Structures are given as C-alpha cells and as structure tokens.
Length: 529
Image 1 (cartoon, one colour):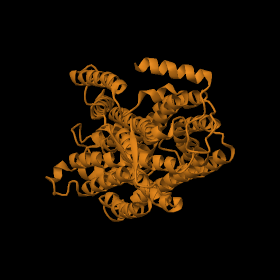
Image 2 (cartoon, rainbow, N blue to C red; image 1 turned 135 degrees about the horizontal axis):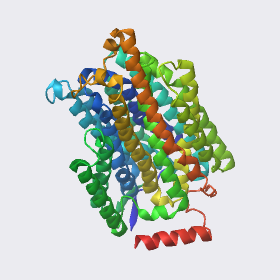
Image 3 (cartoon, rainbow, N blue to C red; image 1 turned 120 degrees about the horizontal axis):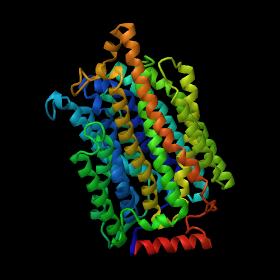
Image 4 (cartoon, one colour; image 1 turned 60 degrees about the horizontal axis):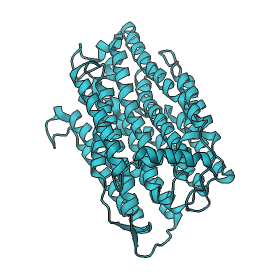
C-alpha cells in the first residue's frame, strides 16, 4: 500500500489535545452510566420490561460493528477528520434519543422502538470515540510512556462512571430521563471545538478502498449472534426455525468474512494480527472483560433501585465504591508501567480479583445491606482497574505503528462484542429467571407483553407480596453474576501465557520476534493463505 502524507506534520500540545480527548472519552462513558441509572424510569414510562436490555444492547451493538471500521478509516485517511466525524454522529444520535417517544417521529406508543433505533445510531458514533482516543494517544506517545497517559484515560473513565450514575440519578429524579441524552450535546460541542482547533495530525491518501464487503459480513454475523443470545430460550425456543436460521446466517457470514479478509487489500480486521501471541490472548481477555463489565454496570442499578429501595440518585452514589476502586488502581498501574516497563503481572492479578468480586456479588439477596454490597463492588472495581488500560497497551505494543488503528480497533472491538454478548445473554438469563419467580407475574402484566417496572406500585404491595417479588428480583440478579463468574475465571488463565515484551521508547516497529514468535507468525501467515 502506498501512503502519502499531505502537509507538514506539527506536533500538537499534548496537554491541550489530551483535554479534548478526555472530554470525548467522557462522552462515551458518561452516556452508558447515565442511561443505566435512568433505565428503570424509561421502562416505567414506555413499558417493555422484556426488552429493556435492548436500550443498552442496541448501543453496544452499534459500537461493536462500527469500531473496526473507524479504526481502519483512521489508519487510511488520518485520524483527525475520522474522529471528529464519529463525535458528530454520536451527538446526532444523542439528540434523537432525547426526542424518542415525544411524538416527533410517531405515536407515543412507539417510544421504546424509537429509542432502541436511535441508540443504535448513537452507538455507531461511539464506536469511533473509544478507538479514536486510544489510537491518537498511540500516535502521539511512544509505548513506554503510554502507560501513564492511558492510566489517566482509565481514571477519566472511572470518574465518568462515578459522575454518570450521579448525573443520571439527579436528572431522572429532578428533570426527565430525556436529559440523560441531551447532556451529551454541550460536552460534545466543547470536545469538537478543542480538537478541531488544537489537534494537528498527519493526513493520508491511499490508493485502496475500505473493505465494505468485509465490514458488512462482520456486521451481519455479529448482529445474528447477538439476536440468538437475546431471543434464544425466551422469545423463541432454541430449536425454533428463527434461532436455527439466525445460527446458519451467523456461521455463513463469519466463514465468508474470513475468506474475504484473507484476500482484501485493506482488511477491516487484519487476521494476520492474531498470529501474534500477545495480541490474540489480550483480545480474548478484552472479550471476557467487556462481557463481565457491562453485565455488572447494567444490573447493579436495577438491584439497588428495586431490592434496596434506593432512588435513582442514590443508586448512583451506591456505585461510588466500584468506581473508586477502579480509578485508584488504574492510575497506580499506569504510573507503575511507565516507571518499570513491566506489565505482565497486572492482567493476571486483575483477572483473579475481578472474578472474586463477581463471586461476592452472587451473594446479593433481599437482606444484603448497602455496606456489604459496597465492599463487594470495591473488589470488582479493583480488578477492573488492573485490566482496563493494560489490555489496550499490550495490544498496541504488539503491532507496528502503521497497524495501530487496526490493532486499537480490534482490541476495542473484542471488548465491545463481549459487552454485546454479555448484555444479551445476561438479559435473557435475567428475564427467564425472573419469569419463573413470584416477581415474574408482577412485572409481566399478567403474562402479557410490555410489562412495566413501577417502583411506586412496588412499594404499595402488601409486605408479604413485596417480599416475594423483591426476593425474585434479587435471585435473578445474583443468578446473572454466577454466569459472569464462569467467564471471568478464564481471564487470569489466559493472562498467564502473555509474554513480557519490552515496551518501546519510540513509535518504531516492535522488537525483533523471538524464534517461537517467528514460528507462530509463519503458521498464522500459512493459515491466511
């Protein structure tokens, strides 16, 4: 591939650019957390308790399918314009989400459908935010120094996760859930202004085109798998024509995608990257991290607002221990990596601690006090802090600079796809467990579609009936965390096999491969032929 840099490259003021990138990171993380806190109120207005996870799933699915595309576009055409475009799409999606169900696009009864559709648009933009931030830092900062900057970004993510539930709770209790989306607009405007005026990165021309066929096949395959995990065993039997048809579609799409990527001049997801042992391992770890992280984030506020009786604002406050643990550890780990250049132990320790935290959360029941659940969340947050940015750092250090966007996109993609599968699977597990409990009839409207979680009516139930309903909800939530443990227990096992490759002090090619890595790369190339 021939690439030509247009115009002189100017080194930007990293601190000013970092400020703009932090705001962009805030956008993506704040949105997820604000919406998680507002979800019970949204479901209370629109109904559809059986489909409430789709408000999150649609966003994560949009993020997932678009992330590799944004990463590759940045590699080919320069990151600045591509990144600013993704911010713009995210803001348009946010505005549309705020207007869902208001009668602007249809009747009020279509509110949930509109919100899910607009969340997908928002997710398409969000896919470029995360990968863009990490790839731009990779352009500006060599791997040895990235630990500090990416640790700072992890800290911003943790702060956003703290601020998100608080802002979301305040908005939900005092304004309207619609402002959970409108609040993105002024933040996004500031980010666009700062980055458009201060960020100066190389612009590229390329003779190749984007692999749209590969992107389409990947999107179809991933969407089919998410639909299987969402509908299987709940809306349709596992042996139903719908689930079997989706399974066939997913299999065919992903197999054809593999053939297309091996022959594409600029593949959306370069399969050769997986010949690198560290990259392959960290991609699997990222998948499992997203799987567990999104499950915890979306079911904890539901437990707190229903079983523990917290308001939307207080449920945000109750998540502070988790965020505090993640914030402190992320900053400490980032500085430690920059100082020592060593990182292998962190994903191993993080995997163990995160699994312990999720195992503790399986103990949640009607009688669990807020202090006890806070302790469990601290443990989970500490584990996530060891993993959040270490995984991206290892992925970027495994590839050459020219593949930085693709590698960042792939690493973010696997975390996002883990989130998509996790939310869908956990949502189905939660709904099925809830349907078999006394809480099921209370929230299904007598077994019909579109049941609502009405927190006020829940409080009005007789004491004995309320205890039964809350017990069913608590059991369904703890059951979700049991499933999360089954997946995260694999994280430290996979991390054990990561090789400690020295972090580069410049943005040059990675160090020469060892004989074992050369053999692995040869096998990977042979498989790609």
